Structure formats: C-alpha cells, structure tokens
Length: 370
Image (tube, rainbow, N blue to C red; front, side, top):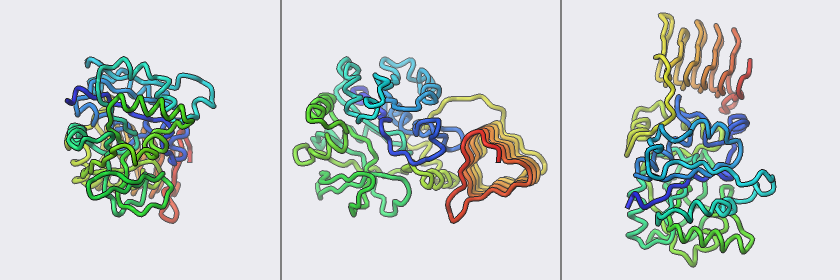
C-alpha cells in the first residue's frame, strides 16, 4: 500500500513570519538544527514511508530550494521509479502567482493525471516532525475516511501559527479555523492531508468553478458536513516553525537529548544535502557546554546552550550564549552574543555586545557586519 501513494509538499502561501530569515529564501529552506533545512523533515518522512514519487509545489524565492533538493539523490529519490519533481508556478504573472494552491494544482493537473497511484498525501514544510505515513494511510482506509488530517494535541501551544480543529467523539472533524482565529481547542492541524487522488482532482475543479482556490479554507472547510473528514492523532515531537519565536524555541529544544533522538531517529532517520566538511576544531582556550556544533566550526572562545552551523568561527575571548549562529558566521574577539539569531555570513566585530531584549531574540539578516 505504501507504494500506491503520491507525496506532495505544498509550499504555496505557507504562513511565514520569519522576517529577515525568509527575505531571500522560501520558508522550506530556512536552516535548522545546525545542518538541516525545514523541508528535510517532511521530505524524509515521505521517503521513509516508501513513497517513490514526490512533488514539491514551489511558489516564490525557490532558487535555494532547487539548489538544496537537486535531483533528490540525498533522499535516494533519483533511483526510484517516480523520483522528485519540483513544480514552480506555470506563469510569471504576479496576479496568477498570488492565487491559491488549488489554482496551481490545476495548472499542473497533468502531473496528477499521468500518475497511476490512487492516494495522495499533501503536506507543508514548516512542520518539524517525523511521521510514519504508513500508519496514517492505514487509519484512513480503516475509518473509511474521505480525507484524513494529521493532528496533534498541544494544550500548551504558544509559538508557531497553526490551525485549530474540533472533532467529535468518533474522531470526525467538525470545525477548522484559520491561523488567526479564536477557536477554543487544544488540537492543531499539522497541515497533512490524505485523500484519494480522484477526490483531490474533483475538489480542484469544483472549487475553481465556484471561484474558490484554497484547499483548506474553501475545498475542505466548506465540505465538512458532506465529506467524512477524520483526524489522525500524532503522538511524536512536533515543532510548528513559521515565526521567529517558534524558530528560536524549537531550536533550543534540540539541545535536549530526548528531543533530538525522537525527532531525528524515530520512526526513521532525517536526511539532508550532504556537504563534506572537516570536523569541528576546538582550541585549548575553548569552552563548550550543551550545544550543537556542526562540522567545519572553529571554536576558540566560549559557547553555551547554542546552535552553531557549518563553518562558524568563535574567536578567543568571545562568548556565545543561548544563540543560533548560521553558516560561516564569525564572532570576533571579546564579543558577547546572547539570545540572538544570526543568519549566514554575519560578522560580529571585536568588543561588541549583541543581545535580544525583553525575551525577543536579536535577529540579523545575511551578510551583515555588526
């Protein structure tokens, strides 16, 4: 059964409040966890669940996406029968690009129609999790559902923007709200939907004929009374990463060994684009406590409770604490960086004091000298 499913990663109009981090890249390729990108988690989950044909519906700022995914070889997709397909908008017209995901699905309807697979799994890139879709599809069939929505019970959800849902005692979804609604519910949608391919094509054509072009807001929400829409309750680790606060909080949670093991190895490993780098180098003056340090880093100063990506240089006398320093960052001598997020190639000059204020991380975009 697992080979009878078409995987779709839908990047069209993802909720994005990552400010400078997505100024020149799409949400899917935001660096995360010292060496990964956000899209790696859902893509690896699809691959580990045996899906041989996966489409990524790109939308805007997708150059880094194409560079990161390439032919899909790092996810072993280049040798599979279906492989990886990156489908950008079919037009450059700004008004057409701004339309909803159903319109873009329709523009690439030949991709769906040519496939002999019966089911489709539609996902987003900003859900940091490790999902066994075999179980989801099995539940979908056993329940006789028209659509299954992967959900998570999160009583203390306070960070990323996510839709809330309500369901009855039998697990049938009775209400879905948009990201900014006020529904009282501790169940959130993980933006993962399972349905038959024929039903998806029917929803696309019917909704567009009615002037509606959003999958969830129009095609699913308006048909909750007609379709059997059910929830599959996921019980693993979930990070909804689409705001600065959620990016920071879930990055810091990776410093907990239990979280790291659950997210990266259960039920399968998380893959990413491989870059060969020398091991991290620690000088005699370095001090590192409870941190993720990627290959290629040079540590001469102090790093505490932080995430350092490839090629970061912390010079002698510098202190990095409770911070995220992305690729090739340089923290010069005697500088102090606290509660901060520094994008790629940021240079902090000597004797600087950089810190977030009022619990909000300080954020620096790419290639800044501060």
